[in-house]
Image 1 (cartoon, rainbow, N blue to C red):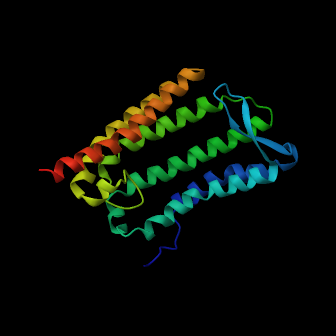
Image 2: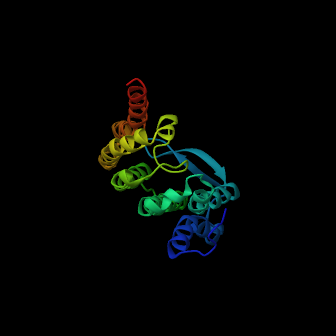
Image 3: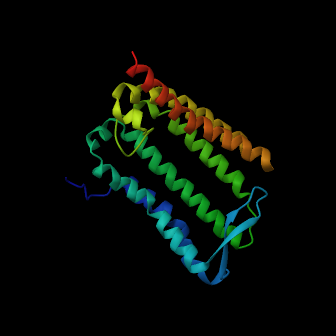
Length: 218
C-alpha cells in the first residue's frame, strides 16, 4: 500500500484551520482562566468544564481530525473508488475543519467573556455543511470510510447506489432544518435540529435495510 506523502494546498489549509483554536489558545494562554467552559446547554450557559491544559490538548486532538480523514482513505480496501468522488470527500474535509475551527474559537471567546450564541452558530454551520454535502452524496462510490455505510449498503452495490441517491436529498433536508434551527431559540430550536439529524441519518439507514430486504426477497 503506497501513501502519498506530498501535501496539497487543501491539506495544509484544512489542517491549519482545524488547529487554529489550539494555536490561538497557546497564544492567549495567560488570558484564559485556569478552568474553561467546554460544553453548553440549550440556553447557552456552560454546563461542562475542563482544565486549561486539558482543553488545549482536546483542541489539538480535534485539530488533527482532517489529517486523519486524509490518511484514512489510504487504508480503505476500496480506496481506488475515492478518485470517483474526490470533490465530495474534499468538501467534507473542509467542512469538518470549518466546524472544528468555529466550535473551538467559540469556546475560547466564550471563556474570554464574549457571550456568543454557541448553539446558534453550530446549528447554522452544521446545517450548511449537511446541505452542501447532501448535494454530493450521489457521487459517492462504495468504500468503508465515507458515506452511508451500513451492513446493507456495504454488502450490495445496488443498495449502496440507491441509498445514496435517496440519502442525498434527506441530508439536504436535514441541513435546511439546521439553518432554521439556528434562528429559533431554546428547546424548539434543538428539537428542529434533532429532527433534521433524524431525517439525515436515521431515515437513510432504515431505507437501506428495507431496500436490502426487498432485493433479497425478490
